[in-house]
Figure 1 (cartoon, rainbow, N blue to C red):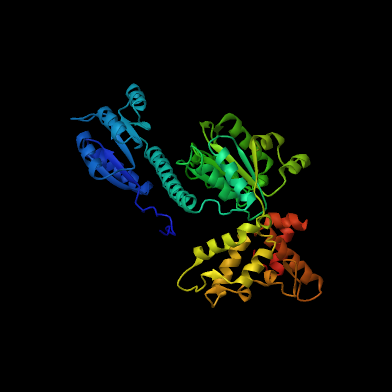
Figure 2: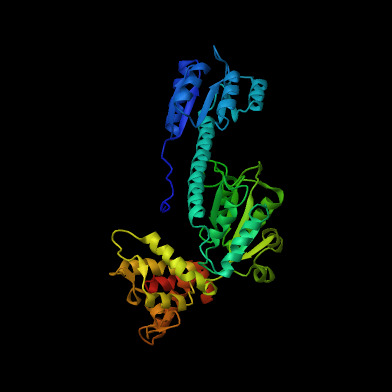
Length: 462
């Protein structure tokens, strides 16, 4: 039986908040405050018995419960909720001075408590934080479904000896909690290996949070990773968890970890050592339990020797090192991967369903400097241009067919002017770095501002 070609989709639904209070005026006040400040759907109940009946018919994602109510008080309702809906976050509303009751409620499973009269901004902020956690949990569930689909049917594609060695290592290290450093050229599939490690770990049903350290601006990466409190800086209108706390109990994947600045390296090291994180602008620290998997296409040992990467952080990340082989060392996998991409991109508008022998020979002989990502793009291009049921040599790009105007994998410029060679050098650097301008500037040994200016001058689109 043919496997499904698409992972299951997460059904979209609004964040639903249950309000439980025997005073209609309190319910109206809560409804007014929350409708203005929180993107949510609100349902109400006048007492605990009614609330339990409502939940049996209409699930909620969070609840605000008054402590003093007739028929069934808030503490009894909380005990029922904790037993029947253990993942439902509950905020208790208590009268002024009811701190001891609030503490008892927290011990029974309440998420938080507020004293009456409550400050509307404080209530809205706490509900918004619960909603943000809910959004992250739904996104993580979508990613888990995607991971189950991908690894359930395709796993790590390849039968070559290097790929079999990778699969064996992933199976060995997956169950542990040791940090893993994945090294390999751009386009080799380092994130796929990281997802495989997570999938084979006890944390597989928890979050896998990928972070592209090279793509996030230096000015915001601290906040993105560690979160921030409201008012920590201009534009910090609400408190955020940060990606580190979002990965709690799961796996944090730091792609291109070598691009982190020294200041962020220091804070990441503290997080790993202390297993805690402090948001930007905050005084409180939060415990985190996560596994770190990092990846880089740089030589981090050289970066340590050059003083651009912390030695202590390197050893924290490099507990287990995994080298992903380039595609040129995986000859047996080229056609296997190509056929996988043909199946992936097949549609009613693309007649090709296989590869002609001549085209297959060309694909196997090519050295693939851009690795698996380049192969995927090549097959996608070929299927877009193909007019036959087979991919033919004319459907492949000139660098693969050996066009006379190409040297190796890079075209010669149209003329011999300095500007033409300069433009070509920039285009080649951007190709090698997969569009990452910082990497391209490093390859060209020029500053990023110079690269931006030259790209604008030559109308180059990364």
